[in-house]
Amino acid sequence: MQLDRVPTAGGRQLSLWTGPSVLRPGQALLEGLVSDPATGDAVQGMRLRYELVYQGGHHDTPPIELPSQPVTTLSERNLQEELHLAVVELQEIGPYQLTIYAAEGDGPEASSQVTLQVIPLNPWFKPILYSLSLLTGLVTVAFVLHTVGRLRSWWRGRTGLRAG
Image (cartoon, rainbow, N blue to C red):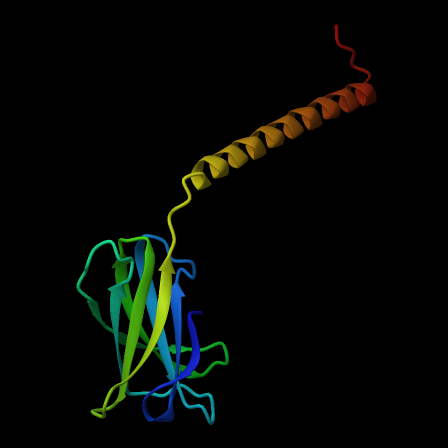
């Protein structure tokens, strides 16, 4: 979660999640939810839009305008919620300033801001993962061969067969 119940338009509260929660270069999902602070229930019929600006400083990039798509879904509490989804392609490593604009119906927009940090991909992740997978496979094969050898010895001992 990036924002949790930040006050916004008309005394409403805004929560924002990103998917994945740790942002790396590539596609990211933004999920916004507007709720009523008195009841905690999701507010239907809100308009949300996102504006993302790279703050890395080594070059100027224009803001990325992201209209959101409202999607009605069931929450963990089995209540109807209207999530506002947008997908963005994050190409730069570093901070991004995300501004979320929310409005109720045709009313005025209120905004909230959060800084999102995009971190570099770990170059050692895949080699370490492959090495651990290979090691697990080798240990499994050794265990199976050892078990089969012990079963053969046991079986020969029970049936009276001798190697020869």
